[in-house]
Amino acid sequence: MSVVKIEMMNETHIDGILEIEKKCFPDEPWTRKMFESELENMISAFIVGVDENSGDVVCYGGMWIIADIAEITNIAVAPNAQRQGLGEKTLNILLDVCRERGLAAVNLEVRENNAAALGLYEKLGFEAVGRRKKYYNNKHDAILMTKNLQR
Ligand SMILES: CC(C)(COP(=O)(O)OP(=O)(O)OC[C@H]1O[C@@H](n2cnc3c(N)ncnc32)[C@H](O)[C@@H]1OP(=O)(O)O)[C@@H](O)C(=O)NCCC(=O)NCCS
Image (cartoon, rainbow, N blue to C red; front, side, top):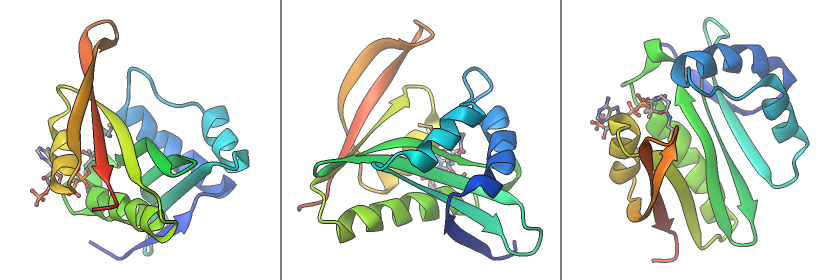
């Protein structure tokens, strides 16, 4: 795989992001407006990985920072680029930003049957701390996970 460069999201990334978003979240993809509003949102930090050879967007991840807590809002890797460490790289960069800013913790929600995401979060030290029953399509529970950055 060629080198993937991580950049802050800008308007030029959004077409590529939307392609991945539709494939990764076919039931409920974020819309163009939602990504555009992240660009304007002062509490949002949103990063994108771009393949240096092709110029294609291959991964992205974002969070909201409120006081000393971050909430991961989205993270995805293009299906043809998964299982090559890009999800881990993206999340680690978001965690580095949180550490640099001295945040206390990072929270997120994940669907109970999303084995890939659960595996990634557990590998990076997130712990399950709660559950929202039938949160997704009134069917699947959401697992609430947190990573304490102060210990
Ligand atoms: C979740 C996702 C971002 C992981 O990205 P990725 O680049 O494929 O993951 P990585 O290659 O960085 O893997 C890091 C770790 O995650 C776990 N993991 C990744 N894919 C996995 C899978 N299919 N099954 C189980 N564990 C998996 C493993 O622990 C892996 O570490 P290892 O390689 O040492 O085994 C990716 O699968 C994705 O985009 N899924 C669709 C969108 C999504 O569900 N986003 C999360 C919403 S909460």
